[in-house]
Amino acid sequence: MLSRFSQVYRLCSAELSANFVRGSCSSTLYHTQSSRPDGTSVLSVRRQLSQLAVDEMSQADLLTKCLIEGNRRSLSQAITLVESRNSGRRRVGQLILNNVMRYLSDQEQKEGRYTLRVGLSGPPGAGKSTFIEAFGSRLTGAVSWNTSSASTSKFKCGCQIPAHVPNEKHRVAVLAVDPSSVSTGGSLLADKTRMPLLSANLDAYVRPSPSGGTLGGVARSTNEAVLLCEAAGYDIVLVETVGVGQSEFAVADMVDIFVLIIPPAGGDELQGIKRGIVEVADIVLVNKADGSLMQAARRIETEYRNAMHYQRQRREDWTPPVMLVSSFEGTGLSEFWLKVLEFKQNQLQNNCFQLERKKQMKVWMWNYIKEGMWANFKNHPLVRKKLPELEELVLSGALQPGPAAEELIELFSKT
Image (cartoon, rainbow, N blue to C red; front, side):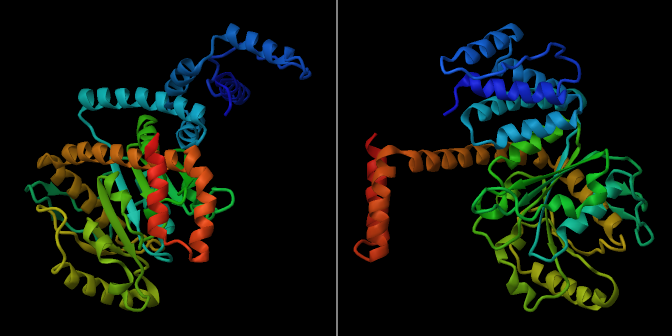
């Protein structure tokens, strides 16, 4: 494992060369010209670092300062730190998160305004990335809303919503969780390349993240990245997941509203998507409702509306609507945004908004415990020593998986 000095040195040299701190560090870090076997070069670098008085705490403070000021590069660096599997870098990332949590708490108390976290999921081919490109571009004001079919609606609390969409411009962050490469652990699909307009928007931030093989397609540190984006001034965070059909739906425990996007065709649609996914959805969108697919989209809309009557409602005060949208033509996007605003207002007035976020913090804690225990189990010396032997016995049929697992757990529990 890298020493603390080595970790700090690499982080600081990378930031100084990229001007992360935007002028905060005017000193120059001189590298030694050669690495000597006696270790003189290492001592020389240590002296230079001690003169700059850079350590993990100051590193975290500087990055936090730049992140809050809206420095996109600092935001990317902070997310990289919390995603890192290196213990030293991860530690710096946690220091940044502590600073960010205090900052966000102060902001909520002073201004009373809450950001909005939107989870988006759906089967492959539903057009999730295209939808985010169209929806996010309108939220930032880069593209005008299509309001031709918008109609006057009313909040459940009785507050009137205007027929037109509010002209307020937002800063949008997109966390697109990609499948992970088995060999490298990196992203495979590179969702950012499918959002060229939004990626080039100065009021938007698109960050593809590898899922790390986690169930549900949500990266280990996605919820931490959400907090960092909010601290950087992005008031709407969209979390796009790999797809549906996994055994857990972690995205629902880190967002304020969960949206299911489905295509207008694809065989037995109601069976193609697991019932659990539909149950946690707050809004169901039938995408690609245009051209030759319009008739199929309307049929799917009707089927889902009927199916919703037999679904267990996730929230007592909210019935999930089924809506038609076209990411290509832009139709239905304004109605969808008004429905999202209605949902948020409804949750705030019922004091459910803040309560749900507090519950999510508890869920995150237990997720970290599970992941930490799993990592400790895999790296336990007795387990690593015994594992190859037991795997061979299981493969040969000499030992059943259950007893093999129990033996490994017993070894892990001894120390």
